[in-house]
Length: 167
Image (tube, rainbow, N blue to C red; front, side):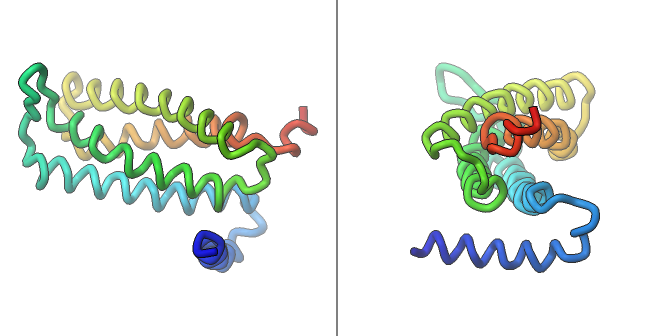
């Protein structure tokens, strides 16, 4: 019951925001932009907090191995934004998908596996080889990952019957 009320509340806000964009963007794409944008801001904010204040820019040493602070911040923030991203995609953005929730979650996890790899490689490249500040590197990385994620979620994870008809 609460999930349904939260879903309706969020959708009503997004629908109000959608009115000026109605002629230019399909509703599903707009919902993805809004929910993805919120999740993106949450991700960058949490990354900043973890990197600068929780980890205090220090290497995280587990005794057996150590993780650089920019990668550790990503590792700690990831489970939070994974959960919020899936819930937004399933219940707000891609609501017309005919796939069962278990299948969606499995496919989402696979697509996120690609996102993790892309995040890791990009952050490593930007910070350690191109010498870009970690928070700025995270922003650049996020742009790349958002494009990848939208395409995979739209055409694989939350596939709809409409997509099948277009083929």
